[in-house]
Structure formats: C-alpha cells, structure tokens
Image (cartoon, rainbow, N blue to C red; front, side, top):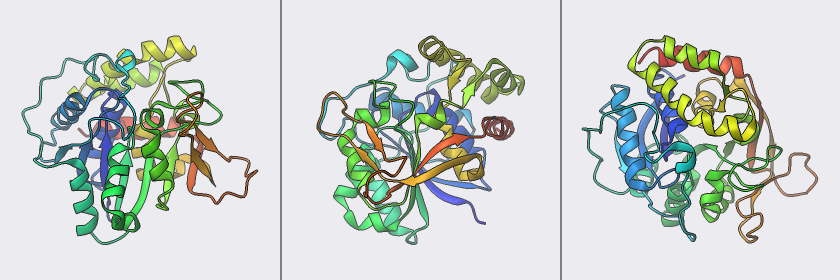
Length: 313
C-alpha cells in the first residue's frame, strides 16, 4: 500500500506534538501533505509557532505549515494553558523555529489540496477544534465528497468530558464547527476520551522515551512529564493520557483500536451540555450511523509503536 496522504489540523499542545512526530517518523505509512494550525490549546500565534518547532525537532523542515482560524465560528475562544502551560509546549526547552509559515490561509490550503488530488485520496486528521475543517466545508462544499476520511481526536461518552462534565475540550471549543463536520456525510473515525484515557504514559513508558537518548525522545519525555502533573492530580491515574497520537497510530495500525459504527450528534444549544458528543453506543435510536466511534485500545501495542517510530527521528 502507498503511504496515506494526510493533512494534520492541529493546535499544539504536547500530545499534538507527539502525534505530529509519529506521523513524520512514518513515511512508509503516512505522507504529510501539510500541517494546518488552529486556535485551541493556546492561541493561533502559538499553535502555528509550535507546529514549526515540532517539525524542526524532527528534522523535517520541508513540511508546509499554515496558520488558520484564530477563533471559533460562533463563540469566544477557550484555551487550555492550565494543562499545556503558557506556550502550549511547556516542558522541554526548545528553540524558536527558523522555518517560516507558508503564505496563505490554512482553510484555502485544505480546499486547494482536496481539489488538486484525486477524490478519495486525502485524509483529514484534526487534533484540535474543528474550526478550519468546518470553515473549509462551508466555503467549498464540493470538497466534502473528495475527502477519503476524517480521523479525529475529540469527544467522549462513557468517560464524560474533560473541560465540562460532559464535553471534551476539542469539541467544546467549537461545537458549531463539530456539528458541521459530523453532519457532512464524510466518513469519520473518532478517537474519544473513552480510548485516549486508556493510553496512559506510565513511568515505565516515559522512561522508554527518555532512554532513546535522542533530542526527540528526551523532548517527548519532558513534554509528558510536564502535562502529566495535571492529569494525574485530576484523574488519580498512573500517568497522563496521550490523546492525539491515537489518531496517527490508527493510520499506521488500525488493528490497535476497536469501536462501533454509530450515530454521533453534537450538542450546540444547551449551555449545560454544550459540546457534548451524544454517541448512540447502544443503538437505541433510529438515527443513521455517521462515525466509527472507538471504544478500546491495545495500549501496550500503541506505546511499542510510538517508541519504535520515535527512535527513527
């Protein structure tokens, strides 16, 4: 099989950074056509800076990085410095990027890329709020039928939420955008908190990153050292969940994950439950399935893949 052509849409974020590193370390499986940045974990100026820092850390300075939407479609921006630190990549001491942003808007890059490639050949991989993707779909509805698949990190059902009692951060930041994407008819694979909360960076797994002895391995260990303090205190778990790399791992080894093809709707009206992913896991409605909603992960296999691939960089 040729490598899968993807666009990574992201708001780095330490776990976003690890997801990008895994993709860049896997050229036989993944062809990164570009990285588009969106406001989310931190504001847009930092997410677009952080994406370039990660590319330079990986030694992949030829990757095109675009800045996109700096605010949600219809709400004020909510950020997560309380988790990721003021830079979004707190932990390691990484230099400012030298590589520039590519001129042009991320949304236009998404549209032009989907139009210029064969229909069904480009996968969109959103790791943050879905603002860029929804804006592209609104601006150019013709591209929706050209998308091979959307593989995203977002939502949660049995695990509830991590920014409100019922809403996961990426969906909560821009629920209107998520609603557009989930109603688009594009095939969607969802990596919700139900899965990512089982991908815990335990001490042994983090020691394995650090033991790589490379700048990438050490930086990843320092990133997870930083943000795990928040999650371990919050959840009482043995380590921090590594959310976004589940998207990249699925592209490489989908057999690591199991889930159900079900209907998922996004709550956009109630402030109490705003951004909730209402997943019909038990198929109790007659609403048509619109997403493959993952429920479990082979965590050991996931971390073996991640460690082995990061060793390449």
